[in-house]
Every structure is written in C-alpha cells, then in structure tokens.
Image 1: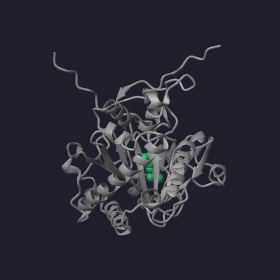
Image 2: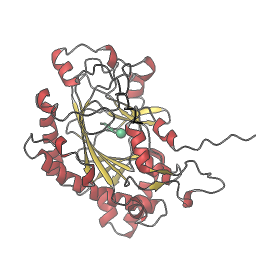
Image 3: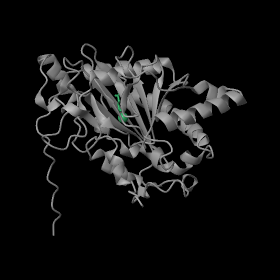
Image 4: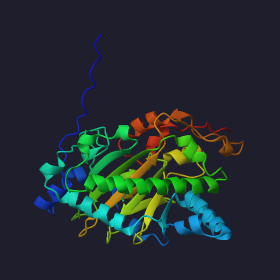
Length: 364
Ligand code: OGA
Ligand code: NI
C-alpha cells in the first residue's frame, strides 16, 4: 500500500514582523497578543537585583594553577545555580563579532522578497521566517528568524545560504569555526567542573552538530502584550549567544520563578546549558528556561549558536551522577530522535524534555 502522505501542518497567516511594524507601527494583531499569564509584566522586569555570573575565559586557558582552579569552581556554580553565564576574554576577535553582526543586520534589512528566497519550511529550523509554529491558533513571537545548519556539512542546505549581503556566508563559516572552538573548550572545563575527564563530552559527542540562528526583534509599540521569543530551554548541549551592540535588554531567564533580565556586557558572549548536559549530568546542571522580550523603541539582534552531539549518539545520565540519593531522572534515547522531537514541537518552557523524563512515583 502506498504510504499515506502526512497532511501539511496548517499554520494560518503569519505576518512578517518587520513588514508589520513598518506598515502599521502601532498595531498588534491578535495572534501576537499573549494571554494574561504569559505577558511580560513590569513587576518581573524590575524584580531582579542580581546579574548572571561572569566567567573570564583567559583565566581558564592562561591562568596560573590557582586561577584555573577558582575559575572552574566559579563555572561549576554558574552551571549549577544559573545554567547561564557570560564569558569575557573569550579569544574571538572583536572584528569578527562586529562583522557577523553587521551582516546579519544587513540581511534582515533586505527587501522581504530577497529574504523570502530562503523560506523556512514549517517543521524545519533552517531558512527565514517564524519557527516552531504548528497550528492556526498558536500565538506568534515578535521576531524574525534566519537559521542555518552549519556542521557537519551534510546538514547544510546550500540553497538557503544567502548570496546577499556579500560575504555573509563566508563570515558565518568563519564565525562558526571560532564559536565551535570556544564550545569545545568550554565543554572541557564544564566536564572538569563536574569531576569528569576533560575530554569526556568531546569523546561522547562524535562530530558535533552546530547550527546558527539569527533573531531580529523589531521594536514593538506594546512590549507589554507580546513576547519576542516564547519561553523554552535549548535542545543543544551548549548555546552561545551574541547580543547586538547597544541592544536593549531582551533576554530573560527564569530563576526561582522570576524572570531575570540578562544585562548585556559589551563584547561578552552569553552561554547556556542545554538539554543534553542536563540529561548527562542527571539534572545537576540544568538547562534553564528563558525567553526574549521586546522594546518600545529599540530593535534588537541576537546571534545564537547551538552546539549539540552527533545525531546518532545515545544519551542518558552518566553513571557518575546516579546513586541512591540521586535516582536516574531520564531514560536513554537517541539524540537525533530528540532533535526531531524538539524542532517539531512548539516552544513551551521545558516541555520538550518530557520526552526523556522518568516520572518517579511518589512513595509514601
Ligand atoms: C534562542 C534564544 C534568546 C535571544 O534563540 O534559543 O533563546 O535573546 N534566544 O534572542
Ligand atoms: Ni534559547
């Protein structure tokens, strides 16, 4: 019997946020207006008093023994208590950060017809458009995205690599190489902070999968009603986020049930733990829920790299993190299957990880 074709997902009309903003600067269509409970209230924005930890990468790689030791301890605390940190002195040339940012901006400023030459197909995460939309009544994010699979090469869709602006693709390539090296290095120190061998993750991951996503958040006349990006955790092992220069505060992380804004530090990169590390460490390091909010007058750009194990890898909590007082919280699964599950589900807090969660019965 012939296979039954899957019915295409009905996602309804999706406005391009930049076009919408340009044509009707004060209109917020219903599909972008969040339910009361999801709206970014003023109270949450003001409630933060502490900033996420800052890790000095140069101390990790060039410091004396004591500096390395204390920075690794700091890194461990950052991963365990925050799941997020900012890295300074990361060794990626400032000029490269500036070029990728400039080119990304130029890309988003191209006419819509030009950007639509690289359309994102619903249920995939490559190309230009709105990702993670799976139904006609789903609320939309106040954001335009452009995403590309970068490594290994077989995940690339060459048709989606833009020819404009000039040097865009070349720069993505160069930037991704540098970010890959940073991820590799950070994972070594993260492994050490967990008491593992330096190479533990690298050996386990195989040829790591790497993707880049550029998020452009146009200014919004009613930032109190919309979200730039819905709450989610990242399906990666590690995520590296570069915030555009002079960006408004936009990224917020959920800590102790409060949305804490991440104050951009010039030239620093924001790093967060993704679902893979949460699973491998049996929940010791958590992939923390985060979201993006918009600004009334300023637009915002973020460049996000996702670094994850090879798709054929089997993952589950490492035996080092499982004992009587820490029962195994996640089942073993194939990372490729998890990735597929992640990109075909709407962003909804930490729901994607239910895929692997073992729900332990409460005994009495
Ligand atoms: C992401 C993300 C936040 C931001 O792309 O996964 O969390 O500030 N982005 O753009
Ligand atoms: Ni994210």
